Image 1 (spheres, helix red, strand yellow):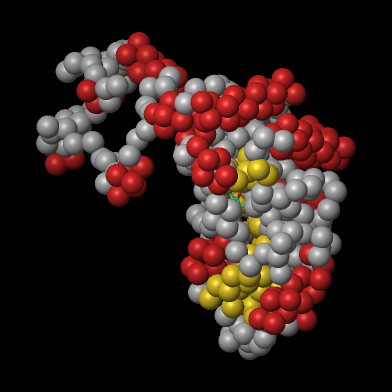
Image 2 (tube, rainbow, N blue to C red):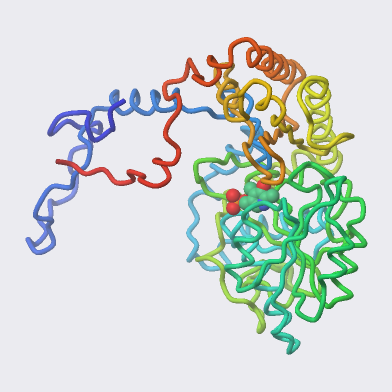
Length: 478
Ligand SMILES: *Cc1c(COP(=O)(O)O)cnc(C)c1O
């Protein structure tokens, strides 16, 4: 396919401007660029066809199910787009005076109120632009907390060995040392080892519950107590809160801070690096260290921006990605208290239904009820037939199914991590299960066919190492 720069012809345009109704002004030469900018010169229909063709070559939730585990690729209601596009929200300016932006501040305030209630926290900041950015904010607050108590020597953060990759990465960026705790047989963090490892160097724990393998840690209260008794604080990775929202509150599980991916659990389409919001909630211990600029209600009932003497400072320019918060608030208000619980229930029901349909054939990493996602291990299939997790993932593309997360967690060989999400119907889940079962048979009949797949997509097996090592990210016009 051609790039947009390779289309069109010199002088071709796609806009017609009205004729000038003000006096023409000629810029002084010093202000004029010497050469024309290297912009595409295309007609409107060329643009439309180009981007429509690109859209057809990608897979989005509008094309079909998106099984990517730990990503919550669910359908996001159109209503949220309508509210986000309201001119009162989309046309305001971040430098506008607070008095003239009260409605926008109320959005932040209300969103924080609802999320406080769902998570058992005291206040949310919406500055961080993504989940990982929220993790960094939470960890910087934990660091500042220890320093403010003269305990700067607390430098160790515990994470489970199957933690989401961003957890150890953000802890390292915040200046901490990572201690990875292995799981026991049931897939939960081994408490004996945790107990042995905590000491006066303990800064805290970073955990998601349910974990990345879709298992709810039953002994989470013991875990957070071990950390608190050692003087540490507990961080909850709530990127995919749809497993528990409305049922269990991270604050009640003993967590001092949490980030939520509003762009996963609370609507807003994501993937491809679009704008996100890693909202960070804090309990009493970390409240004084929040980034400056959280929205608070003042005594006269109006809304203002809070400045705190012990704040970690700003995490981002202005107030974060505001329209993501508008979508999240719309979603929260549409669903209401019961709807939020129902979304969780359906996320679990869908995951367990799909799991039970695959279980007799594929090997599930952990037996028993899962939460919003589960992990298959294709180790045995690979040993028997040579067909790998990658081959099956590629095979799914021929059914119009976006593959699951592959080779994660690293602790499970030939892993496929599947998260169907709450928004899929039984018919779609059955279609997915049938596809998986057919691929299983195919693996035994004609492994080569699967090594060669996918067979129907415009791009088949790109060289992933080359794509990562030698990316072409800049177009050079010759
Ligand atoms: C997606 C995810 C993150 C990171 O979120 P980004 O917005 O991609 O930075 C962190 N933790 C978990 C468990 C996630 O699923």
